[in-house]
Length: 216
Length: 228
Figure 1: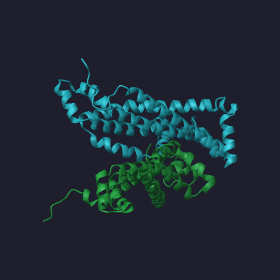
Figure 2 (figure 1 turned 90 degrees about the vertical axis):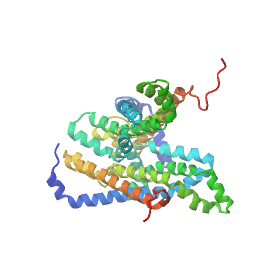
Figure 3 (figure 1 turned 120 degrees about the horizontal axis):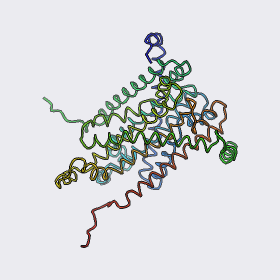
């Protein structure tokens, strides 16, 4: 199985646009996943009975095969990017919800009590004390969810919008391995780059966690 | 929506749907065979690796990055790639499923091993235990809960992903999803998806039951004092 390098040269433009569309779908899904899971996680953290229900529900969602999720959305949103994004969002929720709840749990009780004693209101405590302290665990979830979403976009190729996944169908139908190899390598590269970028974001967001360097 | 659910219910319980070589019973057996065999192979590879890395502390970098690599690997691409390389056989499916399951098991086993208190290990060595005795009699039992978590996670992922076997013209419950997709038969797709989810949930519950059984005798707090 050898790679046809000339095919890669001829399809440079396509590969770039497929990668961009691939990344767009994954990142949009993670963004929506965060927007949904943050309030739900706060709710699950505060209201104990809801916690088991929400985490259990997200676990069940995780067991449904991704291809089925995409297909089931077809009557709702059709053969569109929306279907891809909704499907991926459902998958990111599992990781994001769990990690955000765990992150909030990891904030020491004493710290919250101290904030309360200083007269900080609950919402402000959440935004300025709890969420920042939970950030490392939440970011770990964001990294996992992003890498997972990037790898899953290709499944959406069966409903016509799978970014780099189209290369897999193309290679499969023509019995031609090059697009498949290129697709796998590019997906891995996108995941790697996105993960590294998120590590950078985390460092920017948590300056207190950085190892201190002495200033001259 | 109501109509759809009613049709789905009828599809799931109808006798003819369960019988025959493309019936649910047969597809279910195929799905279980793919999933369980792949998870077993993955465990046979990943458990020793995870235990060794955790025990020696060497290759920790590998254990940590393997999981993120495994998550990033597009399973569909892997299946198609191995399929094109090996022709029509079950190899692509098993290779892809094993590749999917190995990282979760390695990382969780490793995490369980590193969570074992260093003082406990020192005490075991102080009592004259050899390396492999410490590993098997001290570290492994203490790491087991996380090891089991890794196995459960791997099994769920494998069951959900074994659907892909149908894409390269094999059986399993994915058959309903892909055939339904081709025939624009939503009830069939939905039926396949529901069955896969059910299998995953039931297997996960079974493993968690097994786990509880294994740890029945495990002290959770300080060991109670024994009267002579």
